Length: 404
Image 1 (cartoon, rainbow, N blue to C red):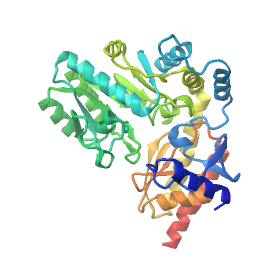
Image 2: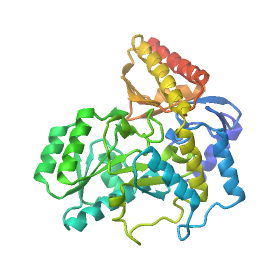
Image 3: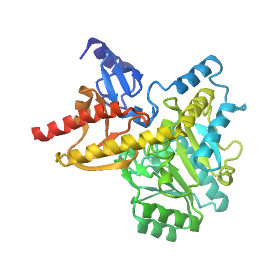
Image 4: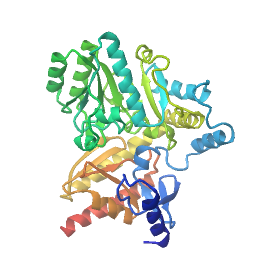
């Protein structure tokens, strides 16, 4: 460990909350395309992109230009005033998803919090008892009190006392359980769902389950919310993950990759539902300021280009192909799943040691749900960098097998 890193680690423990536990032993100081550089200048292939945030890598010129322009002109003016950057970002979201209105906030958690408030307000207008919201086991929707209550994981709830009431947790991909609940309970206002449960281990929703849920929701007048915080903005090979399923949600929530690294979140809803959030019923000081909105515009304009989605398809096919070949040689790999560049490799052993070994060898990956290696590189990652990263991962997994 270098003297520089040792000092950084000491200062971290001295000055910062330790809610993230022991961080991995590196401090990144610079990025270039799909590579990161640490405090000592060591180079790494980035297969995580800041947990699906830096979707266009670290040297995307239009994004840098947009950020510089706002730094030189106006970073923020507040939502008391009109904001043409915000309007343009909202127009692009409508163009890429469905006609509606957008509310900008600062994060995915905030986007989901706003969605939950809107679902409740809409339901209560019809019936004061119609405020219940269904979510699914192993989901993840955030860590504020409302979004945490929507998250159906006990480990996320633990230690925070009484949760916000009104949430119903059902098994994921179980249409019979969902049907039984909405048939007996007339006070369900909405359902919130991830098409791919990211923190839950890159678990895909079954197409029959999703279509069945949406058919029942339409019949019962239940609002549908698709949480696209991690899966949106091209991550799965389409603009949004729900577009793989042929459904029409009432709302989607966005964040992570939306502004390429600048903090932002968004709730996008159909016009008739958005109208429920009346004056004074929600607000956000920083949400959609000039810096964040202009950054989102730069990302969304790039997202429309076929060259980007083509690259996602090409690199995705390469990674899935190589990992499936490796599965034949490595008893450590149980399953490989995902869509586009939202990929999970389920192992037969805990993945933390694999992640640490990868970092030592110059590859940035992540482990979720204890045993699932998560691969989420930049959408525009060059094939050369993808090959370099996969070669490192293959070497580690084969060495682990031999050691055992």
